[in-house]
Length: 119
Image (cartoon, rainbow, N blue to C red):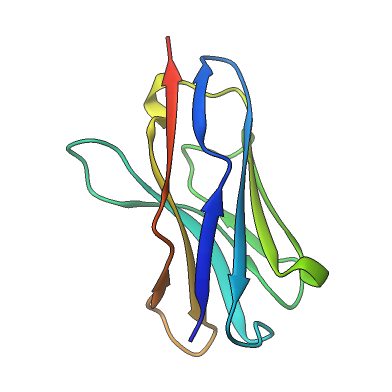
């Protein structure tokens, strides 16, 4: 079992930046892939970014490439999402997620943190 707690959301103007954090606990994460999804009002949840806990392999959605950076601090069991050049289209609830590298489904989800970008 993995517990995930997000923080760092808030209100920011277009063009601004935010950094989200996700504190993970409960299991050894060495065989996990950690990531972020988001869900905007009236839209389906969409993948944002992911990172392999053991190593540095990262993946990004095309919509955030070049603007968002996912990183981790193994010692703190924390994953970060640095978001730059934010636009109103980035407004959403952002969820931290985790899955075993032996599965395809993200089985563990945080409760989410709201990010609102004003124009």
